[in-house]
Image (cartoon, rainbow, N blue to C red; front, side):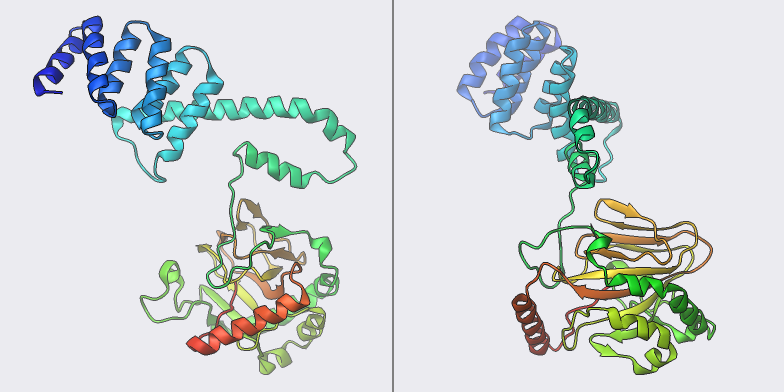
Length: 388
């Protein structure tokens, strides 16, 4: 298309001569069938002429050329909006929202459009939730004596109320192990005796803390510039630990100082990897301190938190689930799923953290993982397991 022809089409559209512009555009798209701008102008002319079905066909054709063309998607969504087809409009608006980069701030002239897209999608999600719950209410009642929390998570994900988080280990990924944020406590009956010792464990920790901050060491302790997202906590006792086991080695001095804790830990089925695991620490998070989102090293192990001191304003998110620590109630979670921690209170928070093998590994798989981890550590001269 020559500049003169482009100028003529723009002039016809600008003066409202839609039929004249339409005739030229039909010829133009035959000559340049992959020119999306021409197709968009054709759709605009068709809209102005009230040829809505033709407009929709043109927009669908554009989306075969580029399925993520923002202008075509917005115009198509608006078309369904104007036709009072909110479900179809919501599906298209959702595609628009997906391709907008996270954190992107739309220019002023687009803000109302983007907000409208969000509003339509949100209203549709709510309507869908009501619709689905109405369809399954009899089944929910029929199975009311059975657990439905797994299905609740499934439905929340389907309704986009819950994000999908996968395992993202920084060292070793073992395929086909379930990606479960928080494991059912009932599957770890050996935790009973450790939980029963909570008061004793807390008392021994308080005795340690009475010595002052020098009894603790920073959890993140690396050379400046190497801590990445943990740089604000690097070499800081705002997040500090008192270790009982670290990188597979017991701290006999610390264990001797905490004999009742050591006794309770006899029930602990350790994740044993020479030079790397097990680890068991008291983790102290200072007031007004946050641990940023991060992932652990391997899904072949799980972490256990035994909350000891939990002031109000503390929280813990793993994947799409946020939980409160309850003193004396252990939590087992997969730390290779993105997780974060915060203490918004005015007092320190304290939990005991230790690692265990994933219960979904066989004895043979544990042996092979253990040997491989040791071999990699020897090869590179590094430790490969750690956790928080």
